[in-house]
Length: 270
Image (tube, rainbow, N blue to C red; front, side, top):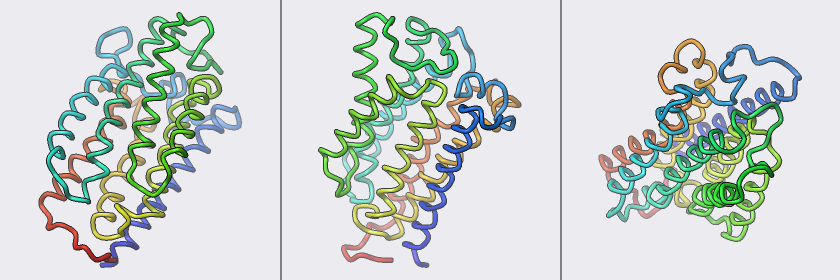
């Protein structure tokens, strides 16, 4: 089998789904059309949110789960030196900071902007200064953990610059309703896009194909599944955790596959 072709196809399909999702969501937010298939709960919050007003709120479930999954990924990859697992090992902190970002959304809903209204942005001038500073630092750490921990030829300074720009955009430019769409699009083009260009640790072998098919594609598919399943089912079972938990779970399954497979050879394979 031509593993490079399979991995390339999976990454191209994933990026195509990300573009379609961004267009569909932005068009709904801009009033160009109504995304009726995405349901009322998603249309109101931009996420599928369950258990509002409780400590089992979706954003908190994301925080709890991501903290535990981070420990699991660190345990599984902590002692390995296999090149196929370097992106998972170095990227484990991003799972935690993803959960932190959800925790910040919950804190801001409770003590900052409340439930966001149309066009409202994340960082409000009326927020307590300490909360504003903590939110900005947390969002910046989120971007750094995803973008600067990547193991590819993209220079560190460029990813730090990206982190600053995206922190400003998420905080003061992009409406809260479009936050998930914005973040999702940026991350997929940085992660799946870089993988498409550079491969997995500069190789396009069976592990490159497995990563594209087992991580990137299922995560993007779950981004579509969340709003489509929200009203009829998902809102009663945790909502956005479908997407959130798919990220570390897909990585765990990939790690287990790698451990069950012989190491990649030193020569580049297709």
